[in-house]
Image 1 (cartoon, rainbow, N blue to C red):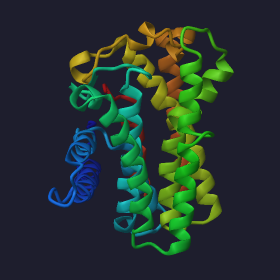
Image 2 (image 1 turned 180 degrees about the vertical axis):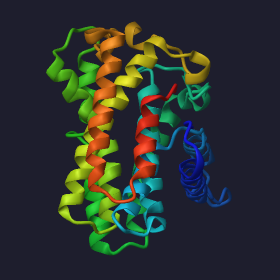
Image 3 (image 1 turned 135 degrees about the horizontal axis):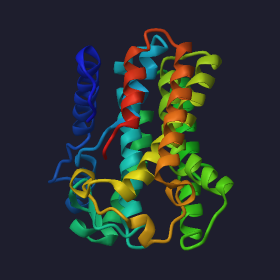
Length: 298
C-alpha cells in the first residue's frame, strides 16, 4: 500500500494479511442453504476488492499501543471494514456520487445492478454489528464498541456528513460547513477506528482522548489528500476517474484553497497528529504509517 521499510513494512503487511484472512472467514456462505447467492456475491465482490485497509490497521495498532491483544480486536477491525465497504457501495450509486468504477473494477451496482448493490451495502452494515456482538471480548467492551461504531456511522457521523454533501452539490458552502461535512463523512470512521482499538484494549480515558485527537487530525488530512487526488491524481493508480468533484459541483479543500495551500494544510495536520502520538509508547510504526498516509497516491 505505502512505502514503509524494514520492521514497519513487515508489521503493515502482517496486519493487512490477518485482516484479509479474517474478512475472508466471513465469506463462507452455504449456497445450498443460502439461496440469496447473488447478494452474497455482491457483498464479497466489494469486500474483497482490495483497498488500503487504513481503518482496521489503525484499530489493531491502537489496541497494541494501549497494551491490548490486537488479535482479539480482529473481529471489530473486520466489522469496521464492512462498514467502510458498505459506505463505498452506497457512495457509488447513481443517486449518490454516480461512479462506475471503484478500485479499478466496475462498481458494485454496475456489476450486480442497483437494487442488489443497495441491499449488499445494507447487509454488510448489519453484518458488522453481528460480528462485534459475537466476538470474544467481554460483553461490556462489545457494548462500548458497538456504541462507538454506531455513533460514527449514523446521523451525527458518516451518514450525516453524506447528507450535507448531497444537499450542497452545486452550491458554494462555507469553510465551517466544509470542515463539519468531512469531520462527519470521512473523519468519523477514522476516529472510531482509533478509539475502538483503545476500547478493545480496555484503555483509560486519557488514551481514548488522545487517540480521538490524533484521528481528528489525520481524518481531515486524509480528506484533503482525497480532494487533491481527485484533481491531480493518476486515474490508473486511483482505479477511478479523476475530476468527479468538479463534475458534481462539489466544494472541496482544493476549490477553496487551491492545490498548494491544501497540501500545506495536510502536512500541518499530519505533523500535529504525530505530535499527539508522543503520548503513546513504542509508536514508531504508527508515526511512519501516518507520514505515509500523506504521501499516498490512491
